[in-house]
Image 1 (cartoon, rainbow, N blue to C red):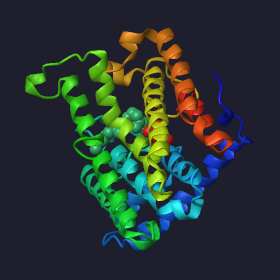
Image 2: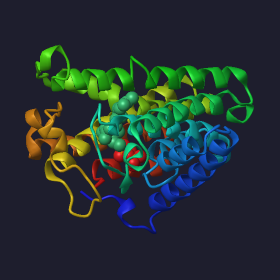
Image 3: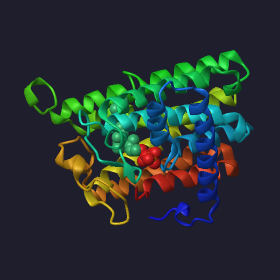
Image 4: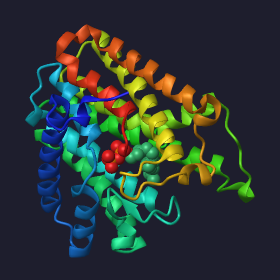
Length: 310
Ligand code: GRG
């Protein structure tokens, strides 16, 4: 399975790169404008938010909004806010109390480059910055749209979404209750993953539809697309964990499996996982058919996600 993003001159690679550059520039300004009262905190926030990363969530948000005629510049604040939440989750996920990782995006994790307390606070500051960005008028002129974005991101990131999924994951790993592991069945793993990683991907597409005042049918189509893409994202992540990639800087070959993390590879097997990825890419493409050729980049993004090597 290949994806056009492997070719750096492809339309997908160019669009991903343009959105990434725009988001980084926006976040750079937003961190400055946020005026952290400590140079160390500001440096840690920049370390977490400005270097590396595929910036997939902002790309999905910008491209979903574009389906409804929303220009990239108008979608950028919401895209940057979403990336802030994602970056905070990575900083906290890397902490010793969570995954205890040394490298992220090819550089030392925030707690390694600074210290645990600074990493916790930098993550907190990025999370709150996200809602500061969304509350401002340039996120959307219409206050009802701003409120819908704030509510959607809060739900996706919180206890019923990403944070809740992370908690279920840690519980299944045996972190609580005297270390007792509770192996999960495939449907429970899917639910956990839909919360932990799927919720922010879903929000990316939903936010594009909110910004574009999309009708219910098109919102549904985008939701079907993002569900399929989210599942593909997670299965690809699980495959990477099992197989690793010599070309990936600091990737955790087998780390999740060794930690007893719940994955679908146990039930699907490696060949079954690859088949499921192909099926999900087809499902994602089918969900976009209502948008015709306007959704070509989103369709290619689904293949890119399924085929990713980092
Ligand atoms: C600690 C609040 C809290 C939540 C943690 C999402 C999450 C929950 C942790 C991330 C850890 C992780 C590696 C999860 C697997 C899938 C995932 C989100 C990978 C990182 O996302 P990418 O591949 O990363 O989009 P880049 O660096 O490209 O942005």
